[in-house]
Length: 248
Length: 389
Image 1 (cartoon, one colour):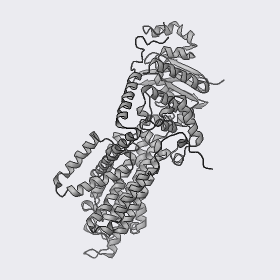
Image 2 (image 1 turned 120 degrees about the vertical axis):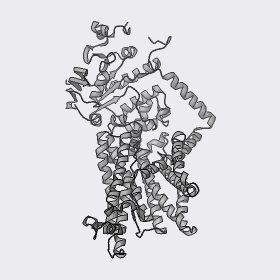
Image 3 (image 1 turned 90 degrees about the vertical axis):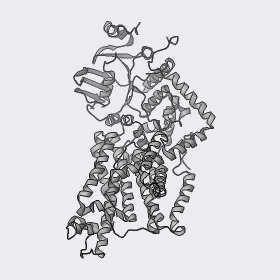
């Protein structure tokens, strides 16, 4: 079986610093993968590379059999990769409903969008998504009236609306209460039933709750890769995280 | 059978394309302006009405890119000016054919003063007025397209884009002054038969109404929602698969077309065009009208253009030397206090009233602030006693 996303020999250098160092990484379709690593390990950089925000210094990224290295972000999205930012990123003045509507999968060109109307199917889909992320009551509120946690969920909803083949979630639980994190982890597990998900996560409670295959990055390279228990038992991983006390 | 509206069926609030109060209020205003030649006798006021309408269309063009897409242009007068100059040149050339200069030449007087004896070849097509009007509308639009491809495709926007547009209008202004044999230079183009009068006023009025409805339709469409998304968060829109540059270029071209139309109407109406009409000062004035009226609303530019220019008409007689300072102060006031402009602020009040009375509103916002406080936890670490196993 070929991998959905395949990163080969990816190297990123920013003003002399090597952030990603000859990184090999791949995800199978319908997998839920957790990406772990200390600060500066290159997790967010990897996501930025995959989504085309930055161009890699060397190496290649293949997605669904296509070489997407160096593509523009909107083309990579069209290929089927959606990204969630670490800080919630949405359209502040639009209503919650419109935020999801704009994210719906569909034609993105200017002139085809000009006469596009919302079909009943699309309307139902938006309501389904809003109910899924529990924001249906706030559909008419503008996004900047939401609380921090609700913003994170709204952005998750927007990603689902775009119906990608691969979701890249960059620390979706940042800045949430424990309750919120728990709920977010549940949402992600539900999403992962129908989508391929790559989750970057710091919080060990969330990682344990999701408990799937884990890849640990360290200094731009894969340090460990495998099921949760195996990775957490790895001495090397323990050494990298030493002093954080999170694994005890 | 009518298909079920997916929005209304589930209670999504959408402002209608033309709400009834705009329909009624707009009809009254249009009737008041359109009937002025019948009940008013002041030719100066008549000329001002047409002029203000042109200014309002111009301000609307700025609102589309600034208020709805977040592109601040300080050189929008470039498109207004080019439109105006094409029409003025054409009218002037035609006027010269029937009104020979003092020396008997059948070319515009400013050309003769600059030593030309016959109309330059590249200007002869402008003798045809319809052709000149087409040029007046298309050339600025194509220029905007070129500008958009050069800047937006290279991810230049924000302050840099504003500076480039400012430079653009300075260049055009210098160009007009420098090539005075073809443009009239400092004196501008004047003394041609303009179209001031009731029929042309109605024409300008009709164009204003068409642009008003068109702008409203555009901002209410899916493209309009995408434009607002780009204004709010262009990065998110880009990573949602929107080619942000193309949307920016599109709206910039629409806006340039509107500005050019305003300029063409203006030149035909007032009968004088000068380099100032293409310069940065005029551009920035229009930005101020938009800000005062309310950016991000379609009525705002109309209100702003009429209020600021109307106030200038009433006050500049007595406060002539203070007028520019007053306008500057007004802009600072709007930016600091009335961030949404007059229309935006009123719309905000109405929205709040609709949601409930003031007391309710305060309680709601308190609750919201409280929720946010509770939810927002910068460290992301569990507090003491809150650990979840």
